[in-house]
Length: 369
Image (cartoon, rainbow, N blue to C red; front, side, top):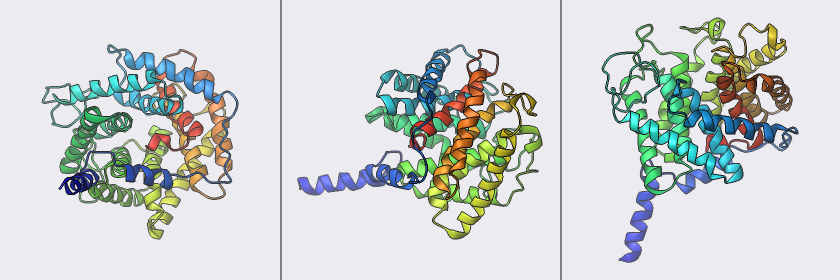
């Protein structure tokens, strides 16, 4: 009788959504694997630069009076989780836990139910004002990154928070086409590349950590929708307006989903075409002197230059013959670092995206735990 009960509980643990399963954690490590021909050792100084920026991120994240959008913090949170993996230092995880707990407290009062508060726009308890799926998806990925590194009731609570948000989006904001609208945005009520890409990335990571097939299904639908879009002219806020934001966010979806997309020949070919287009755009920008780029580094859109090396590091591992991407990313990070530590307005957002790039360079694929 005792053996049967143990077996039943073991099976229940494996099929219950919202719980990190050891079998899927093992699958994750095999899906996200390093190519033998790609150098792993990071350039001298990258590790100390990473920890320096992590410490500054902790200070900002602990400032409960800060006016930064929480989606910006979320990229720092995902990187602090990797810093915790690398060092075991609880100061990194404790900052993430405190931030994630704050997100959950706000979420309990949000309308629509299940949404996250953005630290702008619609406030907890309000029934009017804009509210965006794209930025909330970034927040959800920060909460999820924290959840997988927690234990027991805390982990379950954080997983449940992310799944509540995912359920809200799937119920109300995913279109029959597979694209995702950006929530309560009067300017545009059709599927948008940014909300689609970020919710797609979240869905892939949720599937990997829960085994719930509905997340993989919706992520694959989103990718098929993205595959049909003209990246150069997608509306609203096209490439000519947002610059590095577009390839950074679009690639986020393909990067998180690559282990699954690469198993289907047709989807792999379509994805490679989009990935290469974005990487080529990044390379064309990186050839331009920083002071001459259309989007200044410390501007709202230009700060996303800090996230493009992350994608170059990812695809140096994923795609054959792309070792040079690692070198391009390293060169760009050296150029960006002085601006990140300048203390000027806008530097904190650049830092947040650069932290993701450092995290991938120093501990490949830990960001996608």
